Length: 171
Image (tube, rainbow, N blue to C red):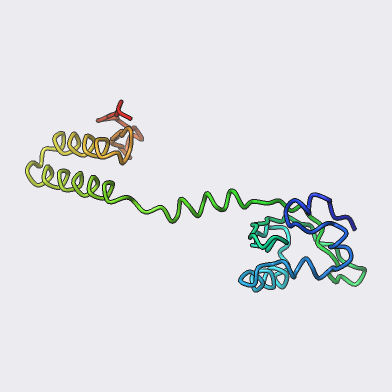
């Protein structure tokens, strides 16, 4: 049984502290994650990675991902999960920031205005070229995308024909 000294960097607890208190592994798991850990252990599917919030010694929350391989005794009972753990806190914080990022009022107004112009152009003209031009121009101008390509596909001949290609050179 080996615990890498790197565990101290991730958790603030030394490998010696984990050896001295085997329950520490469970104790540092964030209270909201303990049910996740329990279900993981009960599932027996130890080959998939497990990511949990853990409380560092300094009180900070660290997201720790573990990938493990189960070890069983002669009677087939789980005795250990040997694996590699890594701190994925930075990655998780980036994901959370992206998920919770709400568009600014300026972005919302720009998008609403673009969709109104696209809708007006569609109602004003049923000419496909005019509608595609307006769609592409407004989507790029509103900053939804820096470029937009509109392509038509023909399922019978299995071909794709690019009918519009717009690119913004601004910003």
